[in-house]
Image (tube, rainbow, N blue to C red; front, side):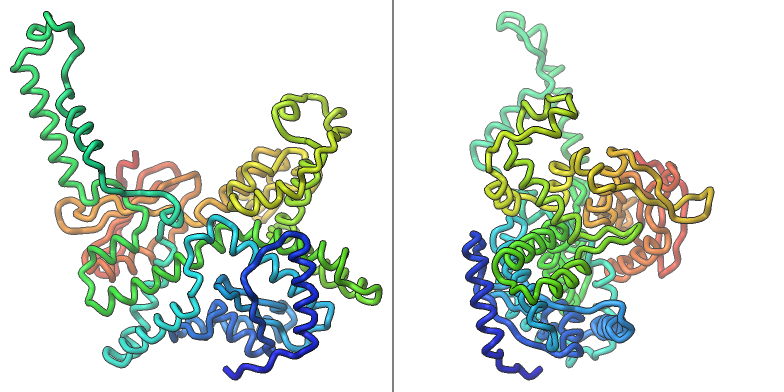
Length: 501
């Protein structure tokens, strides 16, 4: 892809907008812009912003979808920015100067978010090089084993790329025990089964034959636990397959590449509402207060109304994010938080509540640093905000056979929002047993949280997991409150009732 020289007039706009952004307290990595025509922009977008990515037909399919959508006037990519240091951002050739100002202000806020939000802190900031390395490894495997063979295997891996543990980078799941912890654990093991007794009653309350019986019972339980494989359910299914599936070396390498990229992109899905809301908040403030001329105001209003537009039955993350951030700023400026606010039952008092604390901007930067979408919505999506923004829950009605408003009740609306965001809206699947029924078969378990699995997708997932495990794979789930065990062998799916407890 030829790189065009960045025009001087755009560089001047960049310096101006970045100066305003830093003046408001935004702190971001250096930003490198490239100007692309719509065709090249669609190509880069199809690769997730990384033109150096490995070759695969899926990216071509994404490109065709983006191109058709642009040609038919259904969508248009104004900008794209990737989480690296320095950050790379792409501008669409032919955009008006007003559009380019909006994009640059938007990008400054995105990069500030990438740099400071906790959930991006574990990502690879040199992923441009990482993607290029992945591409060279895949091409090397294609040269050795054939393009069709490798592409087919990548298809299988990509169908399972969501079976990771997105929180594992921030939570210590496993760690080696210290010597003091091992000694304490041994001391506790020695006390298992021993009843409390005063010294002179010890031999009567805890006779040797009783303690020996309890010790044998404990040892049998420990042996039973050690026979479990894995000992505890494992959320990162891809990591389990990499470690234990009977794969060839090149297949393991490809699966590691898919898993590595899935973890890189995971924080973007975990913070979509916050990230877009933060960028929309700051591009609005920078342009309306600093960067626009009088002649550009109408063009800005027209472009911004498209970004924040809402449509029935669809959630606009830009709109929800920016309105909730503005609500937080207003509440903290007025002192509408804390014990006294929470315990106030008078709606009249709450409407006129203004302690003039002026903490709104400070609170926004704290929120940007510490929260993801789930914690953001859980803490700040209040009854007052829900009523003010006219939120409702949406669903399919069996009675009418159509999609319609199901409820305007606050709790139901908030619960539906949180369900949509939990695990990025995807089901939680864990490895329950790597030696199911002592036949070296794999048992996956669906952690049911109120929503049944999509039957077709569950079967496709089983078939692809079976290709990697090379032996039958089963999936335990609950359908219509009844336990079901789906089993795949040689591509054929069978189903039977099972205990889901």
